[in-house]
Length: 53
Image (cartoon, rainbow, N blue to C red; front, side, top):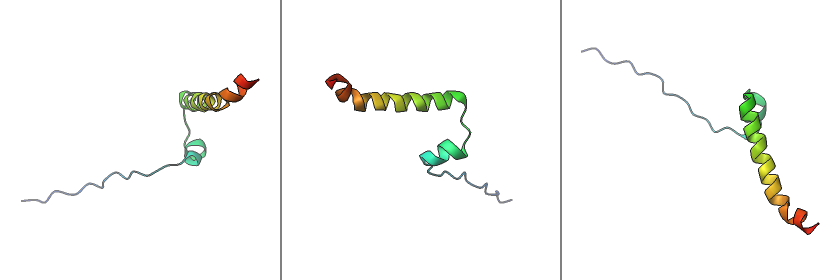
């Protein structure tokens, strides 16, 4: 019997924010999504200060 050749397994890596922003070219929808999440987090964090004014 012929032995099956082993295919190389895919390599998964942990990526950081720096790699996402600078190494990978995200489409416009990806950039808008990240911006929307960041703006929502900032609004949530600064809401007590805004209400204090």
